[in-house]
Image (cartoon, rainbow, N blue to C red; front, side, top):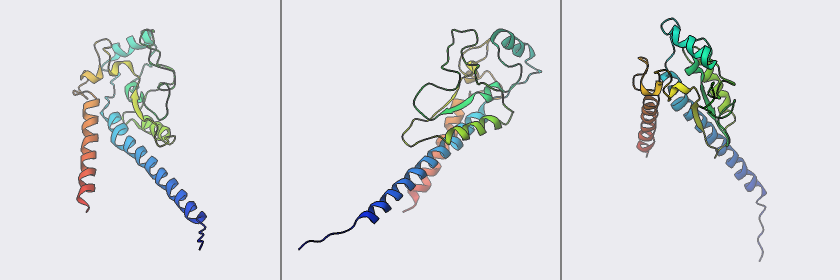
Length: 185
């Protein structure tokens, strides 16, 4: 006795399910990176005060070519969603007079809306399995720049830096999601 089955419909259905699951997982990663990492990082980044720190803005503009406006740190946020070097404008080169970062850099609004929109668009290119890196190439985020390093709490707007409160926000969200997931039985 011989039994034959046409499994083509089942295979087609499994392939469709695989694609649907892959798309949903990619969307989930995009949403988590955006909502739980990128937005809190941008929101935790101080917005400068051109009037109060006029001499510093003038100095960095004249000596390093930075824009003579507030919002460079907020505008420096990006996301990398593929293997390769970080960001438009190449890798960070702190031995050059402009730190090798100014290409593609922009200032942002106090709300960080330009960075948020850019990151949302960058995340649209995410493919499941690729690394996702949220980063900021502005040198004074982490390096002492004329007495300022935002990550070291040099701003009254971010006395604990940017990374720690961002990680705290992520972990809080993660714990909340895990508790809800585990409570469903």
